[in-house]
Image (cartoon, rainbow, N blue to C red; front, top):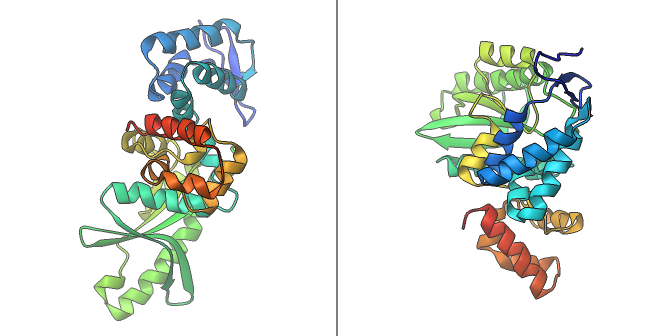
Length: 284
């Protein structure tokens, strides 16, 4: 459906096929989050707005903005690349689980990944178990490599049933160390409105790309400076895969342990360029 509004002469086409008015302010906000100064923000936004054809895809806009940032500053392009970088953590979802565990750890939680927890009916493999302030949290990580996929209501329905099975086991044994006080779902994509409504109703905490508002995944990553190594523009896709296989998920890990680059083999000059970009991304 065309949602063109007065004063907005051009529309853009989302991945879903939905059309919406071109939103310059939203583009400028994403550019500022990358660390671009106001001159760069206005230069990129002006170029894109002036060259934009009607019904251009959001992907076209992203690619053009990314290319302009990369030409000006690779580390700004790396930060701007966050959304795609999260999708590039696949295809198994295993790096995403560790990524979420690191975010929680930097927020003061103790975390364990891939924990088997006994329920009343069956055993459950929980992606992340977190502890903080004498409370325990069961966290499921729903990773999607397809940007058009959302987490629908089936996801919280399934996670809620697992949480309840585990809770029934605790109710029998009454061992406080085994109790989960809350269930959470993290995803690198978005939740449908039904999924959000169900999560709110049953008490599950949902964290997606842009949910909750102003405290979604993108805001947490920016605030903590925990960008994944898949953000880096100086790394090839093969090198990113090699680092992920060696369980190096964050740019910060790369900065603290640069010797991991020796495991995937590269020249001294290449290592220097990669580490320089990683340090700028992490504000080190």
